[in-house]
Each structure stands twice: as C-alpha cells, then as structure tokens.
Length: 232
Length: 167
Image (tube, rainbow over all chains, first blue to last red; front, side, top):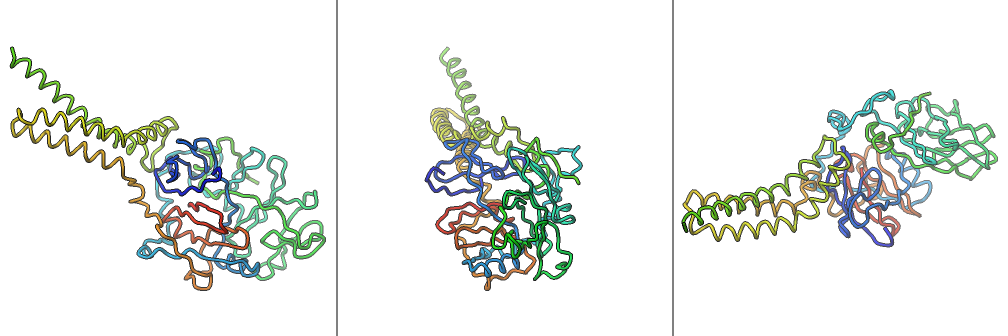
C-alpha cells in the first residue's frame, strides 16, 4: 500500500467475514472487499491479485506445461490433524448473521460473483457446473464462465477476441477425455482452459481473464446489495 | 462531624473504585460482545467497537492507576471483607488491561507463523484437492484450501511481490 509492505493478521469478525489488521499501521480491513474500514489507511483498498481455485492436478499440469516455478504450501507442523476435508459441510451448519430471501437463493448457496462496470452479478456455482460454458453480458461486456476438464475448477473470461464477441461452446468430441478438453467458438478457434487459442485464426492468443469471487450468497449480497442473479 | 464527613467521603471513594473497575471491564467486554461470531454487526456498532478497541489499551491503564490510588487510600481503614473487595477491583482492572492487549482471534484461528513450501512433486495432495493458485511472473503458488480454511490467512512473497492470501 503506497509503497509500504503490510503484514496482516486476523483481528475480528464482521457478519461472518474476517476483519484483518496490519502490523504496520494497525488499520482494520475487511477481508472480502480488501478495503480498510478504520484507522490510518481507512478508505484505501488492496489490489486483488489474479487467482484461481483449481484442483491440484490441474494446477500441477498447468505449471509444468508453462514451465513455471511452482511451490505448494506445506502443512504446518502440529496442525496436520486439524485440517478437515469436510470443512465445507461443517461450515454449512453454522448459523448465518444475515439473510436475503427473494432472489431464489439459499443463504449458504455458493455463488461466483462477478463485478464489471459497477454491476454485480451472482452465478450459482451449481448452475455454472451444469451448464458450462455459461455465457452472459455484464454492463455490456460478454463473459464466459467455464468449468475445466476436471469438472471442478472454474474460470471466467471476457469472450471477446479481435474486438468481436465470440460464442464459446463445448466440443462434444472431447467430453470425458480430459487430455483433449477444449472449447470451440463461432470463428473456428479452439480454446484450452487457460483461455488460450490452440488452433484457428486466434492461435497463440489468450482471452482476458476476469476476476471473480467464490462466496456464499448472503455474504456476496451483503457487500453487493444491488447484485442481480443469473437465472437462465 | 468529622466521622460523618469521613463516611460520605468513604462512600464516594468506594463508588468511584467500583465504577472504575466496571469501566475497565466494559472496555474489554463491549467490543468482544459486538464483534462475536455468528451475529450480525451493524456498521455503527462495528465502528464503535473498533473505536473502543483503539482507546482501550490506554484507558485500562489509566483506570488501573485510578483503582490503585483509591485502593491505597481505602486499604488502612477497611475491614478484611472490604479489603477482599479492593483486591477484586484490582484483579478486575489488571485482567481488563491484559485482555484488551490480547488478540484472542489468533488463539482461535491459529495463524501460520512460518510457512514452509514444497515442490509440486513432493506435496502429499490428492489430484482432486482444491488449491488457491496465484501466478506472478515465472512463479506460481498453490495454497491447499483445506489448509487455508483452517489458518485463514498467510502473508507471503511471490516473485518479490508481497501478498496476503486469505480464505
């Protein structure tokens, strides 16, 4: 922040979302927005780094094929037994501090939240998995939400190439064969899950990736009160 | 006449002693109560709780000094029952001053003091396990979600870029 390196620690909870403080200024930050809500840095926002939620296998194969130097966070000694594979089921039992009925979603439904041009939209994860690729427009920008070859990992792309909107669809022939997983478009390109064209006129070029937040519906709605919900 | 004066002065000092101890305890309990899990926090309540947390370290020390001064004045003229009361107010104000300096959220959520990393080949992870992945320059990191869902936060540096990973 402003050329100064900050180190964060957990300092509280606000409507089931963490509050963090930085050791350098003691300012208070909201985890989900990355904004400082109190203290010296109040009003400033951290930059969101592009990130993915991937299966380990997909991350491994992508980092080796791109020849990147990949490291995995090791379990912290003494805590190995505390890591609970079933943590999502446990969290689902917790009460929610806020409830937003009326938009067809349950409080703890997992959504993918996308914000573009000041407009927020929630895409129910179950729907994205079932319909991938999901194509939509947010504030005039064409977007595609794509479930990867592992059926779990999700990415969001701006479905525009060379100034033109493109329509992505699944290649029926590649179904079930993760090695050849690819998407096709209306202009004769094939695309991989990294969003890069593997053949066709766009070959070698990549679609712009769009950041999104995987969140519970009540939390997303709390911070994006005017959000719409994708329901096609 | 003198005895009456003493008695009302005494009563005033005792009242002040009790109030200071309660005030001190309140400085700890009020934010702890507002910022508690599974409950709704309104914007105003949250800002108030944070404001109290900011001034509590200084105010609890001031309250403790007040309690100490009053205790010293009251001690000699107090019965053993009253002295027990004095000790209790001292304990309360010390405990409050200590507690407002503790980050009890870190007791609950076990932050990672020193992160260790392994190469992809050495990681004991199943293919289907989800990771948070960050790529900067030629470097890429995978943070297993099952670990991040437990520790919740990690300060890391990737390709010389300081980042905070939080889940």
